[in-house]
Each structure stands twice: as C-alpha cells, then as structure tokens.
Image (cartoon, rainbow, N blue to C red; front, side, top):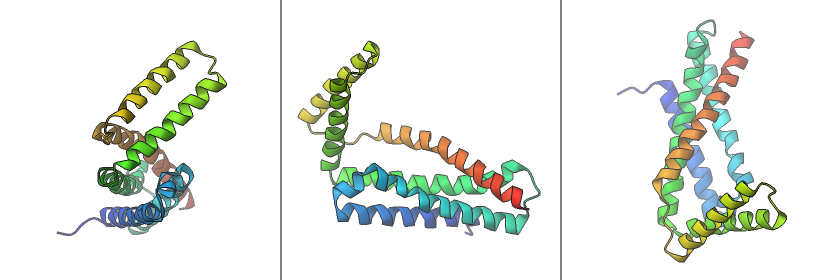
Length: 175
C-alpha cells in the first residue's frame, strides 16, 4: 500500500517527536516534565509541517483552494500529535511516578495561587476543590486516565489547524 506523502511525513515527524521525548525521559523526569522543553518540540512539528506543505505546493501548485493547501500540514500535525500523545500515555503507564510528580506540581501551583490571593471568590473556590481532588488522588495510587489525554489531543488539534492555516497562507503568498 502506498501512503500519501503527508502521511509519510507525519509519521516521520511523529517518530522524531517520540525520539525527542524518549531522550528527555531518559535524561531525567524533570526534563520530560519541563513545560518549556516540551513546548520546544513545536519546532519539530513546524519543520515537518512546513516541509510537507512546500512539497505539496511544489507538486500540485499553490494556485488552488486554500483548504487544499491547509490539508497537508494539518494531516502532518495530527499524526505527529497522535504519536506524541500515545508516547505520553505509554510513558505514564510505564512510570506511574510521572503522574504523582505532575499532580504535585499542579498542587504546588494551586497552593501558591491561593496564598497569593486569587481575588475572585468563585475562582478561589474552584481552586480549593481542585486542591482537595488532587490530594485525594495522591493518597490513592494515581493512574493516568485516558480521558484528559484525548481531550488535550483534540484541543491541540485546534491550535494545529491555526498553525496549518498560517503555513498555508505563507506558502500561498509566495507563489
């Protein structure tokens, strides 16, 4: 079976992102969980999305419907993101300590916000409820649920579409 170029590029990008995060994980959990280092992986996403869009426009031209141009980088984004979230979930199943570390990080953040004073009583109440929820989860054996990961994956797809649209607009304007 011959795969479309966008699928091949997406899977290659997914392998690159997975390799990046496996390296981070084995370098230390602190690196793997660092949000700045995690966001740096967007460079890999952008590189593969850009390359796929350029190749697609080189093969089919850029004087076509904008939706057709957006499709290729978006498919690449979705595949890379799918690989990332599958690895993320697998690592959390493999190493349940990651869940505890993340929950402790979130708990510390909530407690610092509450100490600093939120201002909005409704927000403070929601933070206190989340604090109790995290503490009860930490007292049991925390396991990474799949639901929040799927939710984050779909939320990320919105950002991926926006990035794809920007890439398509840039490539289309270069004609």
